[in-house]
Amino acid sequence: MTTIKALHDKLVNKEISAVELAKATLKDIKDREGKVDSFITITEDEALAQAAAIDERGIDASNPVSGIPIAVKDNISTKGILTTAASKMLYNYEPIFDATSVEKLYANDMIIVGKTNMDEFAMGGSTENSAFKPTKNAWDETKVPGGSSGGSATAVAANQVLLSLGSDTGGSIRQPASFNGVVGLKPTYGRISRFGLIAFGSSLDQIGPFSQNVEDNALLLNAVSGYDPKDSTSSKVAVPDFTSKIGQDVKGLKIALPKEYLGEGIDPQVKEQVLAAAKHFEKLGAIVEEVSLPHSKYGVAVYYIIASSEASSNLQRFDGIRYGFRAEDAVDLEDIYVKTRSQGFGEEVKRRIMLGTFSLSSGYYDAYFKKAGQVRTLIMQDFQKVFENYDLIIGPTAPTVAYDLDTQGHDPVAMYLADLLTIPVNLAGLPGISIPAGQVDGLPVGLQIIGKAFDETTIYQAAAAFEATTDFHKNKPVIFGA
Amino acid sequence: MEITKDDVKHVADLSKLAFDEAETAEFAGTLTKIVDMFMKLEEVDTTGVPFTSNVADNINAWREDVAVAGWNRDELFQNVPEAEDGFIKVPAIMEDN
Image (cartoon, rainbow over all chains, first blue to last red):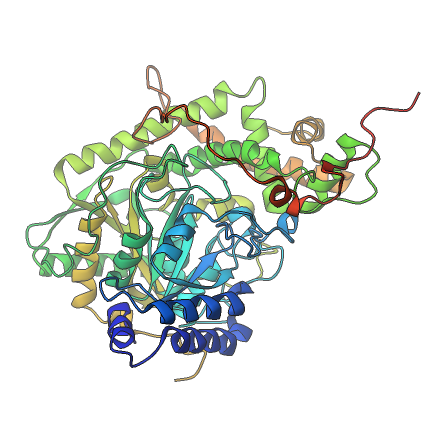
């Protein structure tokens, strides 16, 4: 297993060139793609041209991510590169601009090698809602990779790339990171510009990094964070060096363990691993105590009202007029809208649009949307109270390990309830990470670490301390042979 | 709360979506289950609790009132499904009379 810093040293010492590294990465992608289907688009020509230009200029010795290949989730806009959000609606869409996060990747001389598969418009938890194909779990091809950023998580777990970007509206980075045994962080709301991220739930969406280890994750967050005038919700809070506390011990750190995160619906074997992780933090000198987040059990209901309402508004723009799919044989303008949307959106996207439109419609607004916004306040206050006395909160990332592919028989309500541990973090705008913390039946278990707003450095400190003293991150998928 | 097929048709109309009879019935069933899950919120007392619509830390974002270059029209038209002479082409929006 290599690290970004080790690769960086090789690039600086000219043991390998950026072109050679890009070629090796593209080979890894192709060799493994047949088993995992992580990518919608592989950008071989663009990547090699970019790498050649970097070799020409020379690697920036002061920038650890210079010349490093990266995969980007397909709902993040890339100029001149197909950006579909895994929807038939955008099957042919090539943006004429880059997302700010992508501009920052390029400015850091990172090489985009492809766009990753996902649930359509980031709606789902298994990547099976992609209009194009399902992605497979890197540990077991018969299991889901999680979602919605399933392609970005699997690509890192399968060693196709060392780094990727995903997006997280209700757990879409952390849950697939958990299912694939990799590190995935949802930063604080406002930390990374959302400009160019195809909007789902605008008050919840956040772009974030996937990696094979904690330090690499922090290095990527360093590269893409910061205020952006093009996103008025991006924050002007100073961007620290996110690696600054990595290596510091956790003695005296106060960690809260919410009892609601170990209750109903959590697989007992997953719970066991998380309790073992809590014990491990105690052994490292942290103080771990049980707390309560009494309103967290309402998170799923609040989330599916708010996220669907915001989605129903955001997805109005897909009407077949200016870009993307347009239905044929429409007789008038209304017919274009209805036929394009009915044929272009998949079932889950339509379900969310319907739910959102219902929640916002006359007669129901107060009972659903307004009520949800108030309970959201109570969920935020629960976190504020805990963070008055604690530095971090830990719990499972997902209630189970990865489940079988083919959700045809899955009940939407059951699927929604599986997000119960990740959703409250988005509702409160807080940062949260998932790191490998064990296995159940040969499949990875993720430990979630939640921090105070804009305190990703303490999350990385604790995550790195855990990683340095455990071997879970060294377990590798076996589907590609030893 | 039961979501009827008529409710589904009304919301579909607002959403600019169309469903056949089988889909309408299926949606009525799943939406009923999901809305029943939403009803759980009724047990929370929210009297006097403020409404949260977003968690951004800045209220307004201002910029100088200075004109900046916009998008190039040819670029903007690259993704238009049907265009003619610099216009987006759509079917007739008014009936011939």
